[in-house]
Length: 625
Image (cartoon, rainbow, N blue to C red; front, side, top):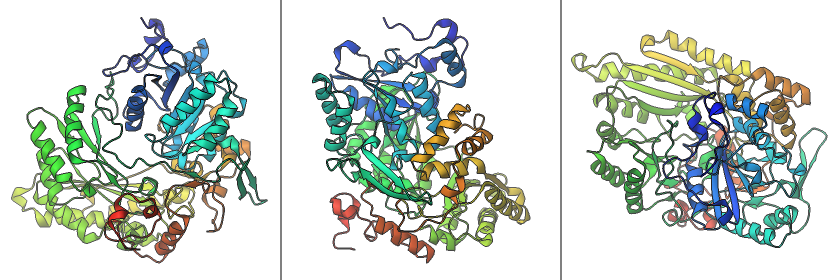
């Protein structure tokens, strides 16, 4: 019988106590005494968010298939329990065994979003693990980070023993075997860390590298401490997605999670090459899962979970070559079972509309377009590969099909943006609204058309052609939103148009955390000490505390956001090799400034560097350069 880490008295005091109990459907139970390695897998946000994360579900299943490993889960306690745990000195615990995380061999933290960085410190602090890697001893777990944010791990490098760069299916087994060897031979954590850096591909150990700075604050050099440590760390890629790990029995949360559904990952990577999109670059090349494998997996996962929705996960689902076959199979398979199909990342075409009409309630649902920029000129700059003609034709077909609600997503602050580009967001929204009245006869209309335009503010990300771009300040972004808002109100169909925009203060901070170096860790630590946690939650985010943290540490936000970067500057993430070359990114940056479009990977090979690895879509483009 497992003894709960929290008493009934405490559980009655907190919101959603089921967040902390474990025992969910498909949870793995092992005797901790029967395994060699205990691994606590952490998502540094509240349970409701973390339980929706596919990566943890995959790794949880993969680790627990080994008899010598017990993988358990841990999430950030919400603020109410956080306060109680500090007051009563209760160490953070894993859900499965309810035992303290500090007693585990590994604490693996998924880094999904920069605004979770103070929650990383919360998890370490509540676990009673020293915040800085240099202060940890043999009695502490190895703290390892993975996920999208590790493509610039430097702002949080001081808090981690190591990072796993790339896809987890390939090298975790080797890493665990090495840890067991070192543990059995009594070699200690420093020997393990060094050997991991030397022997395990994809492993980055920050303490094995030294950074030197120029007088102007830019990086002068980034060097390994010895010749046995690799100068560059290469991203790990799982090539065969149909013969690797995928959970047939995913965990089912006791309480409603943000995405309470079966998630079926149909492919990885994207052929599109949008210049602002980090995922489109770091997850190259495109690799598809076999359609028969996916059919079988979908049926098993629905049976094993009882979920009433299945989502096809991909950066660009329309580009999956067997999408029609898979979707029509699912429609036939689930038509009498009350299961919904969610199809994110679809282009709006005849097939998509046919499918959506079969799986959605048209009266309630809205269609989503992501033009990203209002003008064609700016869409060419960002290489969106979407013309106004295609957008209008998609909207026209949707209106004919019975839809009257459309959501449009744009970005403000993109490189080379002008006032005219901003105003074109309102103009395009109005054109689509007008198209509804031109397309649908009055007697067939189901009420007024509703066009909701939303803008986020552009953030330059590592390993994109825009990684050298400047950002603007909070007020600059607000002023841009006001330009769009004013133009919206002046349009002919203004009553049918709605406009929303993202918080500018969060955007500016995210920009620093995305492209920061090791010096930024001082700000993150100071913000945490000032009380910042759950910064991705608007009700918890305190811009004043963050600004105070920058002031207290003497770190200048503008150095990271507004400064012009030369193409020759050493960037904090340059020691990582993701397969896409820096020369390609430079070429794409120059093509952006020239407003030139680069074809997608299926139409022509742009020479990004991935072809040299011998796998993915680029192999189909034989002989092209």
